[in-house]
Amino acid sequence: MNPSAAQAAQKVMLMNETSLPHRQPDATRHDPRPDYLRALLSEAALSQREAARRIGISERVMRYYLADPTTGDYRPAPYPVQYALERLAAGD
Image (cartoon, rainbow, N blue to C red; front, side, top):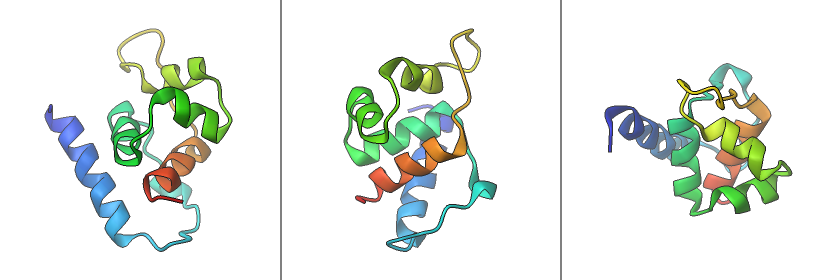
């Protein structure tokens, strides 16, 4: 696991330890990095396809959000997508 992915995984663990069952959205916590979003998917034990279906976006758009930022396919995920993935990772 690369250092960025390890940091993302640690952030997910901390988020789960400190989040309230119905934590309110807070856009100041916006972190669209693909490593963080992938860590959320891993924590939720969901495939990209299933996560996309559950939050109401297409698989293609999910792939854009998870693409390497140095490629032309990358698109930063908006905060509502991140929040939805955080809630899935928290078991909501």
